[in-house]
Image 1: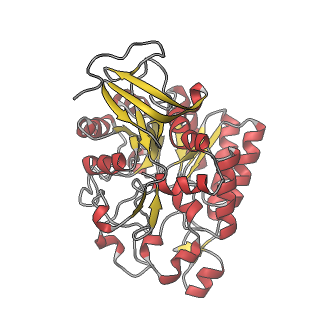
Image 2: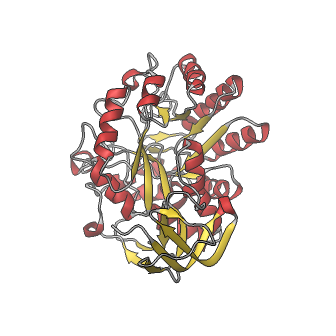
Amino acid sequence: MNATWRIINGRIIDPVNSRDEIADLLVIDGRIAGPDQPVPAGAEVIDAAGCWVVPGLIDMHVHLREPGEEYKEDIRSGARAAASGGFTAVACMPNTKPVNDCAVVTAMILGRAAEAAVRVYPVGAISQGSEGRQLAEFGEMKAAGVVAVTDDGHPVRDSQLMRRAMEYASDFGLTVISHSEETTLSTGVMNEGPVSTRLGLKGIPTAAESIMVYREIALAEFTGARVHIAHVSAAMSIDLIRAAKARGVRVTAETAPHYFTLTDEAVIDYDTNTKMNPPLRSAADREAVRAALADGTLDAIATDHAPHSILEKELEFDAAANGVIGLETALPLTLALVRDKVIDARRLVELMAVNPAAILAVPGGALSPGAAADLTLIDPERAFVYSADQVVSKSRNTPFLGWELQGR
């Protein structure tokens, strides 16, 4: 495959190198060339007029289901869905079957990912079996290739264990990713509020999230360790993170496109594709998420891509599984924030490329001379209807089917 390209007429958006300009970008043998390097004979010309040329998008929170639930998704199909959505790298959560809590499982994931369409970074479990009883071997997993640790899908209920996890992870330069959920409060199936009352569904209060966000911040402040808060959905959580950052606590946080696009009103028809954990929140929470993306309180946009088959989703709302796919819709939904002037194009690149690379300490996030040509070309104006026959993922559990989206 030709790995020498001259990309012309594109809008280069590269926050790390303070670039936002219409210019050409030269790639020689798969690496970004310097400004004075001559164009080699035979370079493929790509006319990017009207497009953005940005560092490759990185989704730091996906579920690829392999090993154990390949009927929902596997590494190869998930990677294709990621590439279709503009991502060049993803970080996959450890709640597989078996759980990625040891070097053997990590190595298997990386082996399967070797021929995938995008780079796949495994995230290891905090505890053995994600059971919250005993820490997994962080050093062994780090040597095998994990880039962070989490029990995502299961909160670490034992505060002493979470403290030890933060201290242990710091020894290996790993970030702890927190699934912040107080399970004694999160016994419902959707956001607690007027809509849940109207629908007769048991609610989950925002405090179920924010209480655990407070604990993680307190432990990070106490230990001096880094903590990353996953899938933030609630205004109260955002207030805590904003205040912690002002104090210098080493906390970062992400949200997902469904939390800045939808509200709990989307559940009104009992569509199980609107059931997720944490749940869709109120309009006030959605506005708080949007504001936090703009002001830097939230550092990243991650999809929490969670494929499920009809076996788990075509059930009554109470019994259906939590989760939605998101790799193929994240970019156009985030571009809607740009069109609404909530964020600008530079901020989009920070949220979807620069910051995920920095938080996970993985390559990417910049178009620096000499670096691997890890990049995404975005047509921000291209409109399309997201239909079931277009879905690349093995699963179809998304509330955005039939939506007219803009940006590919």
